[in-house]
Amino acid sequence: MDEKMMLTYNRASLKMIRNNLHVYAMEASDPVAQNTYHESMMKIDDLLANIDLKLKEI
Image 1 (spheres, rainbow, N blue to C red):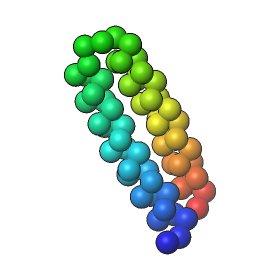
Image 2: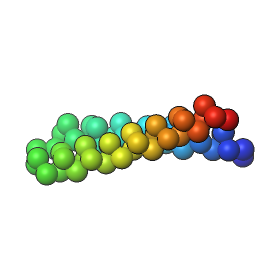
Image 3: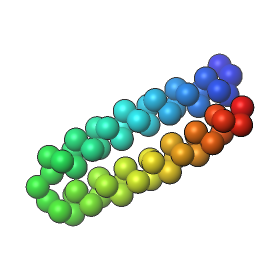
Image 4: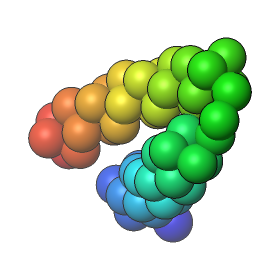
């Protein structure tokens, strides 16, 4: 598996995880849990941005 394919696969997996976190955040009634989900989503957004930059370089 080459680097581009691996990054593309990881990007798709992270997007799926992020979408699940979004659903959990919307369903959570506890504000602390919602905040934790949103923080995790922002970290994944950073990873996705880095992967996108790397994919543009390849």
